[in-house]
Image (cartoon, rainbow, N blue to C red):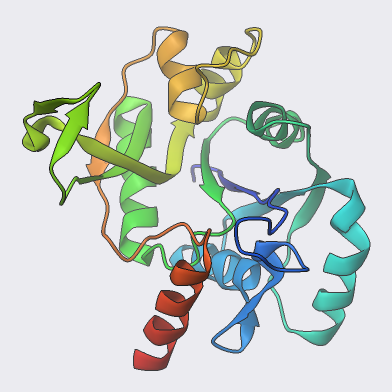
Length: 218
């Protein structure tokens, strides 16, 4: 059996949410956002080992939440100062070969089907990056481009473990906006798979309102 891991990265502060608590801990539909996210991965495959990467300063608050709400088993890892460093910290606690999905903690509505498809394609091709077509017209430096050529990148971004560990052996660059950009920099092919528009990253109060409505409709 192929070993599967999920690294859930959650380092938000809540500034754009205008919240006193980090956005990943805000309650939506009866649970903190981050707990919805962890549950989705366990629902996809109960054998997935979950690694949660949080700022060390948030460990105590997270422990309090775990004593209040039912959550799924996971390993807690200290985050870094950047997204790259947090991803690297998560990867460093994995000793086995297999597959790893790296996912934003504040994307709680990723579907089970997408998670499983990402593991399937990563197993076959090395990488699987969830994306959707842009619904809006797109301009770059003021010039219109064909929006059918534009993909909006989501997570999970799933990889063969040996591949993504090799990619992270580089120095961090400002161009590393996600894990796929790290893999691409290392010369690995990026395979895009279809996501869905419900898999939003909850960042602003408007996103939070949408998330509440989404939970209420289920």
